[in-house]
Image (cartoon, rainbow, N blue to C red):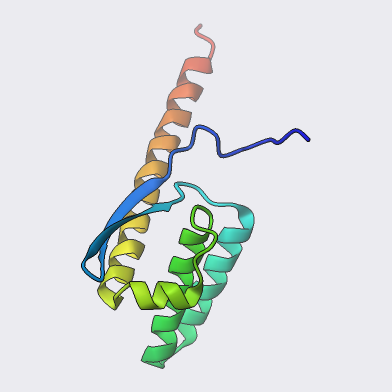
Length: 122
């Protein structure tokens, strides 16, 4: 059976973290499927509505789990909570936010350049 891999050529982010004294590398996507975006936004909405710190932390770890699950499908939410500290989780979220914004800005600039090149000269 033939397989179409739409992620071919899209390199993941590599995040290296100290997990219980051992350096481990984790792959995070540079772009997301519609399902991943919907799940992350759903968790973000719950996060904004929650006042309980434990619930908020659990929601952040759930977001990390979604990010990790494409390239590390065997990892569970419980493993994420056990492996990463709260600071690690916040650092991962900030890293993704920073780099996703940078990629989106670069893509938008590329599209603007393409439009300029396509305009006919008079």
